[in-house]
Structures are given as structure tokens and as C-alpha cells.
Length: 475
Image: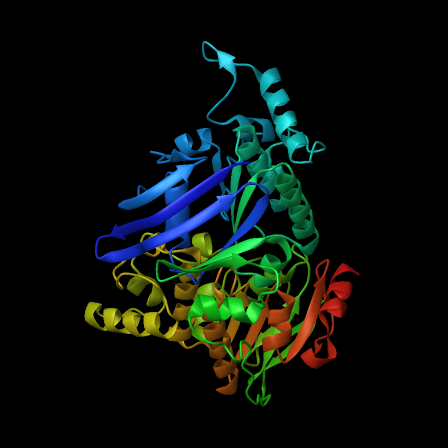
């Protein structure tokens, strides 16, 4: 079976030490989880493994032979393939065209489309999904099917080591189960799986061994069996998190937001946190976007006793802020520095802006070199924290948070939960959309379930269980 060993891997970017002697051993026929907070070195290590970044020092060996790919294409040719959280597919091409991309069959510049379709069917069959039509355009597929195309693409390239980076962050529970079945099949075939996830419940279910990185170093490697999630968290953050979901006394005050139309009836009061549960595609995100003025209004929205349809700019001035689930296209200006992203809604002079950015970087544990670093250079979790920091800096009174902790490590989640609890305690109101049910049950005062565009009655969180929420969402 395949075996990949990394020993003493170092990597520095200027003054920043990303990896400081990391060691990792990956074996065929097992799932190896890679854990660590944002900024711990996971992304850099995977870039080294996939050939996107060259290490400064250290040794790598694949099946006993020195392994040092010069680029991702060479790594794939040697059997190492990445399946990223942000899928790298050409949405306007077909499934078959994506699977064959970069290695298209043909002669003299003429594509052999029949052969391309055969290769795609074989790759899809190899991962247990022969029913997916290779002639469909990727843009017509749900996100779960697009992920299958990415995995089939890796299989077609001859991958023996599959690296999954936060693979379930955009999947429904049903699709997560399908992915786990697929991974189990790859494992049974003798392939090696590297699984990166902040959902530790998934790690305890699917992984055989795990390695923890902290501050660019390997701090622990061992078997998953018998290890508690609390132990994993302590290993990741270097300290015990006694209360992941802090709850202070919340006193509901005056009504801040009223929604009363054919799709929803909901009141949000100052001093409370309200969660919106539901399946992906149920309408939760559209509900928030309508309130904020991003999508076409449906009427019946009253904020601070004022009715009407408003633009997002007007909502900001009124005291309402939205954290979009699509941070890269709607939540951040990736080409601008951290400091400018933080103050876009309330500009400051350069010196004050830099000082303020440093404060928020410390408060939310944003891992970055300096406030002048471009947001696009940060990890996904740190990007999310910058987007949240802007809302906190702006000082809005109603926070619309759409998947606020997606892609964020456990330590940072705890800090964000503290912020949410404090906001409610100060008389603000928070609406959270989340696919992670323990999060809703842990931080919310009331929870409502969205199903097929209709919002149910918001009931106290203590009256719900995970099973009840899921049953209500499925209908």
C-alpha cells in the first residue's frame, strides 16, 4: 500500500514562520485527520505536499523514494491530489471535460470526445457514482455533485493519496453521509485519505489516526479510537476550553425587527439571539438577504418601527449589518489590506486605521503578518474573522450572521460565541443561520426552522433537540 512520510518540514515566508519542523506519516488504507487552528500550518503543509509550495528544508518520501514535486501537476502524476474546500472546477464545462482537463485525449489538436466520456464514466464508476451524467455542465449540478466531479477528476489522474480540505462545509447532512461512504470505498481500495476538518465529530467518526499542528509544529499524532473531542480541542489550542458556548443572562427588550408576510412571521427583540435552522436551499440565506436589501423585497419588513424597502447602504446607516456566507465575493475586498477591509463602512485616517486593525486582530485572533497584509492572502477562517470584525467595528444593532463560523477553528469559534453573547447582553439583536445544529442549540435563545421558503414558529432553544430540528427541516 501507498506510504508518504514527511519529516522536519520547514517553511518561512519573509519574517513569518509557517512550518517549524513538521512531521507526518500517511498510510494506504486509512483516513488520517489533520487538525489545528487557523494559522497552525495546515494549509502551508498541504501546499508543500501538493507541490504548490517548495519547503525550505526537510525530507519527503513516497513509497521509500524521495518526493519533491515542483508543481501540483507533477504531484498529481505521482498520485497525490487535493480536493479543496473552494472547488477548482470550470463551471461552464461538462463533467467529462472537467475530469479530463489538462490531460485531454486526442491527436493533432482534435479532442477525442468519445474517449473523454469513457474516461469520465470509468472515473465516476471507480468512486461509486456511475449514475452521474458526464455530459452535464458543472454549473447545473448541486454543490455535492460538483464535489463528486472533483474527486472523480483526482481518481482519473491516478491518485493514490486524496487530500480533503473541509469537504463538508457546504454539504447537507444527507450529502455528508454519501461523502463518508465514498471515502470508505476509497479507503477499502487501499488509497490513503488526508482529512482536514474543524468538525471534530466527523473526525471521531471517519478517521483512524490524527495529527495536530500548533504554531507550525507537530504537537501530537495518535489513534482516534478512545480520544474525546475535548482532548482534541485542548491539543489544538494548547489550553482547556471549559465553555465552548458561553451563556450569560439575556433580557429581551423592545422589538427591533418585525417580519410579517406570506413567507414568515417573526419578531426579533433587543437582547436576544435567534437561530434559523433548515436544509441547504431551504431559503434561510434568501431570508436574510431580503431583510438587508440585497435580494428583491417581499414586503412586511419593519426595522426600528419603520417599514419600507431599503438598499444595503441604507441598512448600514439604520444599524443593520450582514455577514454573508459568500465572503470571497460579497463579504470582503480580497485585494485590499486587512485594515481597509475592517474600516470600509467607517473610514479612518491611515494611522488610526492601522491601530484599530491591530486591536481587532488581537481580539478575534486573526493570524496575519500585519494590518497591511491583503485579505486574499489569509486562510478562509481568518478571512471570515475579518468580515465579522467589520460588523463589530461598525457597531450595528442588528447582526445578520449567515454561517458565521464556517471554516473556523474551535478556538476562534469560542471567541466568536463570546462576542455574540456579549452583543446580546449589550442590548443588540443577532440572527444566526447555521447548518451546524449544536451551534444553534448552544448560542441561541430561540430557534425557528425554514422549510421550502416558509419560516416556522420561533421556539425557545431549550424546547428543541437536534433530532427535532432535523425532522422539522425535512418535513
